[in-house]
Image (cartoon, rainbow, N blue to C red; front, side, top):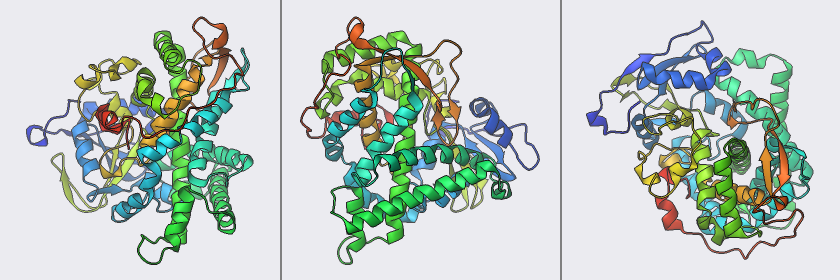
Length: 491
């Protein structure tokens, strides 16, 4: 691929991916070796035809074309096999709704994700992150994937529902999410409905998990109606549902859909990023050393608060590089709402389009040595030299992730909190590569923890009771808007 240039100066190339199988298309290649398959596509063009089952689709391989598509949400709406499956799970919440409904929904939900609100929650983030690793013991094997998913599920549920999901229900959501993520991916790459109506164990697990998540959310809503009003997103939604006059009134179904959408997406992606970051740091000791040095200097053994976030520069660079190297959201679909010309090709209404942040993030024209893990890419000076728009972990345009600021804050707090106390090491043997599913990341990552209190430079003894600083106003918002492509650090 080439770097981004204005469309008028670009002669786009269009091709077809080889290896189409009858009925299942490229589904086998996408299922068995998805990252290799993606990386092979730019050799065939900037826009490449593939097959998802019997369905014809197009993979966008050039960053300029991806940004053109993401900016034109009227023509390239959320749709295709991925969103067909997601709507069966999430309904028409802000994550999955069509273009016509998105602006109203986003304006309704945005107050919960504003910088001041996110900053006010850093104390809760720090408390949960400290609780995550409080009972670890040196030499213990830790299921990092389960730990990070448990953390992010608790944090997003507190934002959405306060304490309406008890620990047992939150843990049940985590287990359901694992089954859902496995099922969604295969339903996207092989969208043959008849296969998933069969009463196989995997299909039954998927359906049970979907039904159970919706039941848990429905119970939380019913209990809230009978209980005390709370200042959380559910409270905001219930107020809007009851507002028959001036506000943006919403239906009972939409209350449910918004909560399911945000709970599932707000749990899975940040947990995958955190697990990937711990795995990558263990394989890159110099990056880990720099992270520990920064955390020790900035925090000196206490928990981070909102004022610390802009000072944790290298910590943020580690996460940004993780989002580049192993983006949890790695493959997405769109659908054309009308006939359009794209990359010089005439596409009819209803055409499925795919794009992959993983593919763009591993373009050597944008990121030299793309397989290397280099947080230094995102430090001041080096970051300014990268191509504009090459990094899109949260998408772009007006469908950009509503929770990007919340996710970056919770991941920064969690990484700094754990790294200030523990080192995580891979057990002896081969480190398994990330497993693409509906998201990309390690799904059964077990690591060995060692207390940093016994290491040179460690500043936080195991079990030390630490109190977060006062929750303060939003941190460096304008500076953050200049740091990094596509708002990695802002909403």
